[in-house]
Amino acid sequence: MIQANNYMNINRIEFSVTNACTSRCKHCSVGNVPKEMKTSIDRNVAVSIVKELSRKYKIKSVMTFGGEPLLYADTTCAIHKTATENGILNRQVITNGYFSKNEEQIIPVVRNLKESSINSLLLSIDAFHNEHIPIEKAYLFAKAVCAENISGKEPD
Image (cartoon, rainbow, N blue to C red; front, side):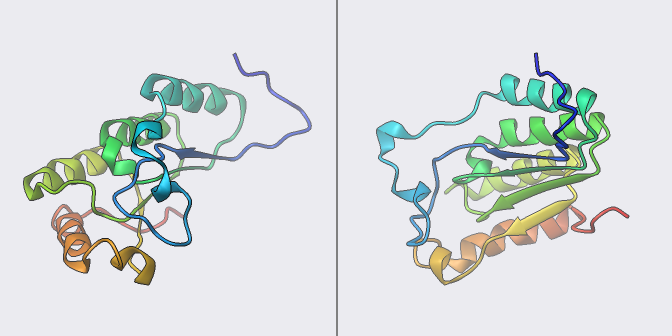
């Protein structure tokens, strides 16, 4: 159980969902993790943390990132769904958009993101990512996001 602290104001929760990634960016240590050391956070523990901190503090924002958080889309979406249920207004995901070689898996993940009510999607497309992820792969994800009408608009 988390104890409230009168001297601490927690208003944002950030989850590094996994250290597994589909890229190996030069500026990032995550992509260089040996395969046998790749891991992810426990979905149930993460959901419990969101619930408990929301009861004790006025949490304004939850962010998920990685590695590539959409390699563990169920965990990522469960975190954001719980954030929505607990009145957290800003729900952000940082992704490179490339989490599956199977293009048919993109749309179900995007629909799950929409159902979890994320409202800020930050898509990393730059020279670092493009060295290992063709821009066409990120475009497929972006196209699916647009088709599902996921709003990137921040709440007032």
